[in-house]
Length: 525
Picture 1 (cartoon, rainbow, N blue to C red):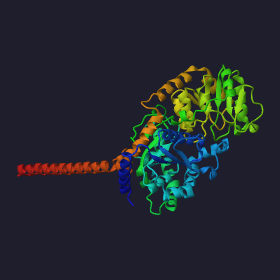
Picture 2: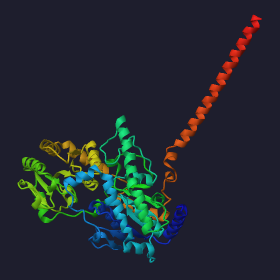
Picture 3: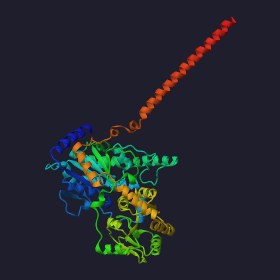
Picture 4: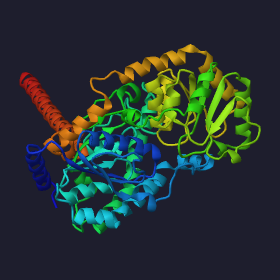
């Protein structure tokens, strides 16, 4: 089944609707059980609801505050296992060594089974008409199957990428890839790269993309045909109704590369809407920490207390040595923490991260390097000590290191010397904080803030349909985009011309040789 008629119908439908009404009904589907990913997804939902659009949301983490024009139609907490404070350092290391196979299963294929839930089945088979849906928003990560919901409802789809855009997502919107100077995701390569690094970078880029499709294409296409329509086109075809992708990035951090208009950077979208103030007690403690505070957390999933005993003792030793500088450490289960915590260390199972980073006494952020945390640190100009665990965390910290506001530690076995050097270097070498402040200014300097940018382009996609920003590369094969057929044709033409020239030259030389021979024979006669 061709997708072109569907796109034409959608375009006419949304343009006609836009002329009648400026408020739209949007279905948002966020099935991934990662708290950090939901921060940007729900920030988008909140700003759209504030704009007056009606949001029907499928989510694992419902918004706790009351919002106008917002309704949770499916709370996935009843069918998923929370990932909050559930990961050990050992498990994180295991995932890091086998990222794509694990993530495509746990955060991709497994989530696509939600298409069979009664609430989603009802939405697709008996969609509301008072008013009908104008758009579907889905998270762009490992579960592309949810693009099929847009097909079932006959409306455009927008993807939201809480991470820097991955190569398979780039391909889906016709984004050309530049491994010559753009480091492959989940690597620590930096531009400029040597020849052999560019070779490795190119291989890594293509290999990760092939691996993603190997684990997801057959399974997720089958799930769509099982739960949506036996004759539904493949995900590759359905991605042509993806109008644009909102990406949690900004060039000052992620680097410069030419992009298609369908990729909209909105890095930092979540920061304003997720800002929680300090409690009175914590604010008093922060204010009293006049020698400075180091904030230490590994995010919402991985627990610091699961570090090996030797590593914990190394942290304790270093933290004790830097007193009166204080340390604020997120520890999910304090009873599991090794005894001997230094007096200058305060622990808590939950910490309002952005408020801590915004405090004037926060000097260093020790972090796993998740993108949300990295963007928050940049926003508030706080230098980083990165302890990356998996995925894009290595790239995020490597970016910060190359820009001069971060240092990286080995998560599996950091030595006491390396921890001590990094802590003291960031604390007492002002260049890191100056670089953080400089890049904060650069990160925040935009023609429109991320909220206004996101709202504008979402409304644009509804008004003008999925073809408005779609790259012509979406309609071409990779070898046509790379002009291999053109270069091949030109090469053949050149070879033919060279061949003809050689044949003509040989014929002329042969004729000339015969003529000279004939003259010699005539003279001899």
